Image 1 (cartoon, rainbow, N blue to C red):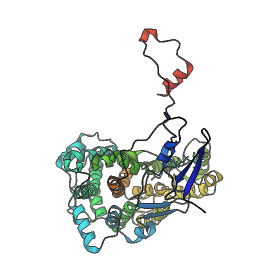
Image 2: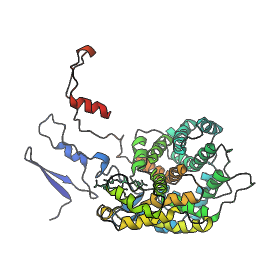
Image 3: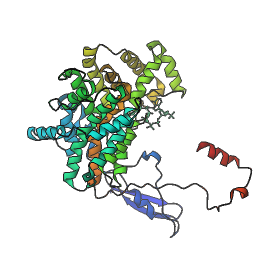
Length: 443
Ligand code: ACO
C-alpha cells in the first residue's frame, strides 16, 4: 500500500531510513541521523541558492510557474488587478482576508494618518549627494525609521506589529518621493490625505506651484494596479531577506530595509531599470537580431526575460501590457514599446529562449509605463519597493508568528585548508603556489 514516506539507503553503511513526506516535502533535518560513525556530524543537504529548499510554510502567495498562475491568499492576480485597489489588496495580503467596507475604510484611514515623516528624515535626505540613487536613499531612510520608533522592537506584540505595518505602508511612498525631489533640488511636498494612496504619491512626486495637485485618473489607476502586481511574490530574494534578517528578531524597519536592499540588485527589482537601458542601447527595431545573437553568445542578457519560478508567461507581464494602452492614450506612445514588442516576438520564436523556457517577466514592460508617466529610470525599483512593502510585511509577520522558525542560519560545506600554524612574515615559504596566487586574485 502507498505510504507517505521515502526510504533511503545509505550505501556507506548499508542502513535504511524511512523519512516522512508531508506537504510534498521531506525534512532536511531527517538526514542528520545518517552517519558513518558516532562522531560524524550527519548528512547535510547541499542546495546553493536554495533552488529546491522550502524555507518556510506560507499562506500568502501561491505561484504555479509552469502554468503562469499567481494568487494572493487564493485570489487570482487577474481578478485583483481588474477589481481591487492597492489598499484593499494590501489588507488582503497582510491580514489574510478581503475587508468589508468598514474595515477597508479604517485601514485606509489609519495608513493615511501615517504618511508624514519626522522632519529629521528630511535632513537625512539633504545629506545625500544630488546624484545619489533613490534606492540607496530609500534603504537608508527606511532603516533610519527604526531609530524613531523604538517600540518597533516589540515584535511579539500584535498591536505593535500592526502599528509598524501602518507606519511602513504610509511612509514608504513619502520616503520615495522625498528621494526623488532631493535629486532634483525641488522642495519637499507634504502628503495630501484627501487623495488616494497612488494619487497622494503622484502629488508628492510631481506637485509644483498649483494649490492642489490633481492626479490624472489613468496614471492613478495604472500606478495602483502596478502596486497590486508587485505586492507579493512568495519567497523571492527580498522576501527571503526580510525573513532571514527578521529572524534575528530585529525590528521590522531594519528587516524591510534589508529587503529593499535585496530588491536594489539588477537581477531582482533593478531589472526594470536594466530593461530601459537595454532598449535604449538597442535603439531601433532593425538592430534587434544582432542583439539577440549577442545574447545567445553570452555577451549580454535579455533583461526582463527569465524567472526562477515562471517557466511560462508571467501573468503580471500580460496585465501590464493592458495598462500600457490606457497610459499611452494620455501620454502618447513610448517609442520603446515597439522595440520591446518586437524583441519579445523574436525571442519567443527562438530556440534558445524556447528551450530554456524564458518568457517576459514583470519587469519587461513595467519600466516603459513608468517612463511614459514621467518617472526617471532610477525610480523604477523604488516604485517596486512601495508595492512590495505589503508583501514583505506579511512575510515578516508570518515568520515572527511561526513557532517553527528560528534564527536563519544555513550550514556550509567547508572545503578550505585543514589546520595550519602561523608563521612570521619572514618565514613564510616562497614562491607562492599557483593555486594560492589564483585564489588571491579572486578576492
Ligand atoms: N537572457 C539570456 N539568457 C538567460 C536569461 C536572460 N534574461 N535568463 C536566463 N538565461 C539563461 C541562462 O544563461 C541559462 O542558460 P544555460 O543553461 O545555457 O547556462 C538558463 O537560461 C537558465 O538560467 P539561470 O540563470 O540558471 O536561471 P535562474 O533561475 O538562476 O535566474 C533570473 C533567473 C535571475 C531572473 C535570470 O533569468 C535573469 O538574470 N534574468 C534577467 C534579469 C531579470 O529580468 N530579472 C528580473 C526577475 S523578476 C523579479 O525579480 C521581479
